[in-house]
Amino acid sequence: MQTIRSFIALPITAAIQKSAAGLVRRLSGERDGIKWVPGENLHLTLKFLGEVDNRELPKVCATVRDCCRGIPPFALEFRGAGAFPDPSRPRVVYAGIVEGGEVLRELVGRLEPALADLGFKPEPRDYVPHLTLGRTRGGSRRGAPEVGERIRAAADVELGSMLAEKVCLYASFLDKTGPTYQVMDTIEL
Image 1 (cartoon, helix red, strand yellow):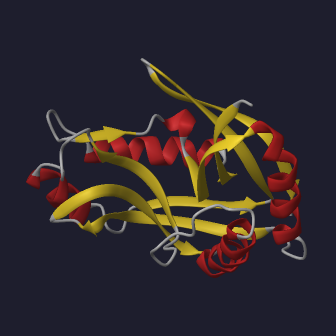
Image 2: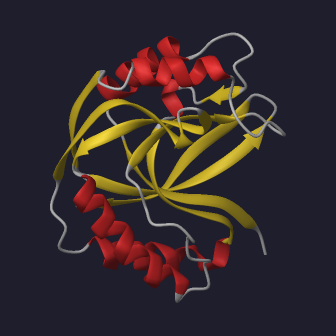
């Protein structure tokens, strides 16, 4: 048995990656306590699966395919910066989604129970559509206060729109330079 660290996500276009990378440059600062996601690694996560037995991957792929059935391609619009739990205590910094969130919630609403039937732990919180730009580093509980100020200042920054046309199952490989991702399956909407 071999396990593969896996997640389900929507790939984002190069134009959105470029805009998001520009927003990261605007938000980041020296010793801000945030590990920022490199532009080429940005994706819209729907479900983190964790370590998956490689023999279970065909079932996971079939389940994702079933959950995507009947969902046509849809528009996504990204705007502004935000943080969980909030900008004054940022643990996750994200770009907001102002169009397409309802379809993402529907898709995640299908995935969660279907994947729970396969033994994957359901998320304890409701899904909030967002594009993760960074997370607090290691043992740090929150980013520096200046990050919150920069997040509030970037609340209305336009990042652009794209057509979401596919969902991917990714493998994540961790090394000293950070994660690299490999697409294991692509489901066209």
